[in-house]
Length: 130
Image (cartoon, rainbow, N blue to C red; front, top):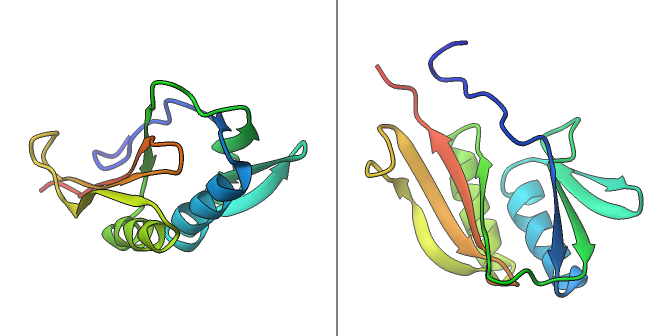
């Protein structure tokens, strides 16, 4: 595996949300508009992922307590910025502007938002290292 590729560790997850309408608007903004992911119907539930997958499925029944941290892999820095910009426009709360986070690892860039249920939602991009 090339050094800049990372293995897939989680195939998909179901996220119970407190208000499906609010969460749907937020995740459409950050994942579809911001990162270019697709939205599909997964057995009656909205699901989001890179084209051809359903990584995150939203269902009523939350919110989870305590809030959790979700980190979505961005393909480039532009997706990271789009994630943050679109999330703020959709009512998410800023929890860390896009930028490098060298304390996590070399080349680590992240952007952080709080979703409608208070989860710390992140887009992360690992810049190629020389």
